[in-house]
Length: 245
Image (tube, rainbow, N blue to C red; front, side, top):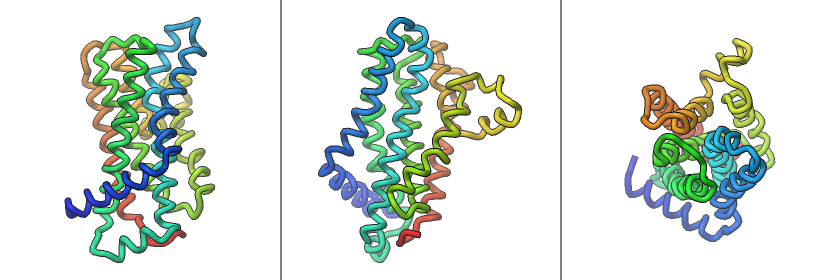
């Protein structure tokens, strides 16, 4: 990998996104607005908001980053930009890391905005540090970016990208422990949930809400989510192709 080429790729992606205000709005405003909506849904039950709000603080950025990253990468391929880039002395690793860096910077802004609104404006009650909450939210957003880069290699249109949502995101959403404790699920479903990264993201958020100090389980959750993001980025580089399928 070449640092100069990676940074040049990241600057190009950020420059293109700066001309698309609707995408920026989707990235930065939608998670915040959904958290505000959730706050008023549970207006009469603040304990319920505290319980589910922290988990969704990580889930919302992951979903939006998945959608935006996968669609943006697919557009690069269908427009021929990706083929032209790969015909230059630009490695797949440089390209993937450039995209990851660009969308990762957006993920930092997105996760920071959502966390700040939840903690300081919506008064999300947590026992741990807000910075730990931000860490998990950021890792979730980066994981969504990595998944988006990966699945874009298997889609031929934006419609197909959206179809990957039920296959990639929804099972994790249903099995992550948000709707029911994972240890109360059927054994097969519990085993499946134990290998899904969103389960560890939700566990990490719960640890921050309930505990004032980071525990060993929290460290494990952080490592698993970060490791999954790096693994998926590596798979994305391996499956990167010039043309759409």
